[in-house]
Length: 281
Image (tube, rainbow, N blue to C red; front, side, top):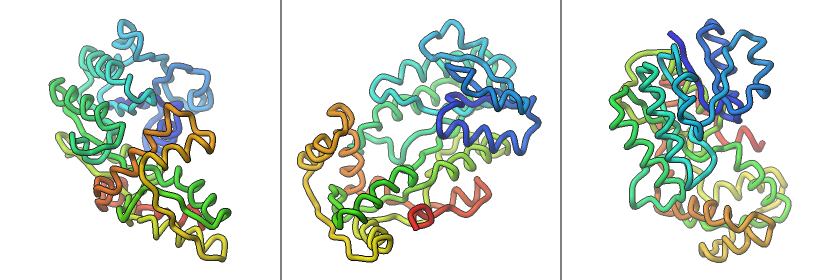
């Protein structure tokens, strides 16, 4: 069985590739990337590294040739990636791929204000309509990306947030990679949507407590509205086009869209889920 990973040179893609190469014959691993040079080290380990650009649909079928299962990692062009995802799904089907696992988001429904939801909902729909077997990997927010938040709060003594009383079950990229590998290398995952989460849903108070443990002094939680939070992000140097996206995750958290905790990492990924506290301790 041959398994392909799209976006294999990205942060999540490389983690999946490394873990796959530890459990499979490298000849069964196909790594797709726009820049094969970035994966030269994995090619040396025996992986089949192929050029693939979702914007060049005419060339995609060849990139998927001989592949049985695919991990379709969502691209990073939020708001402009559905066409590329659809092109990849169509090319995979044309090449004879049987099963696609896709990295989505929890609760990709119309009442979820997270800015990434429309892209993921449309891609999930395209997969369901493709005729291929599918698995949705609905990864929670990455715990790795919360380390700076906790560090800054520890330094300043304040956690400025729009999370309200909501919690998010932050999950590490490495744990997401383990779940992806579990799905790609075992049976029984077709037609399932997995919420991939950490072991605990952290509220703003929890994050402040972690920051306080790190600094040795109490950290104050400062709750602000979405507009003020966006303005603060821009004032701190975040691009104006990106700040509303981060704000939208806080809105989704307030509504409980990221609070579900599951045992998917342990049951499918074969490892205990890593708590955020382990990253910031």
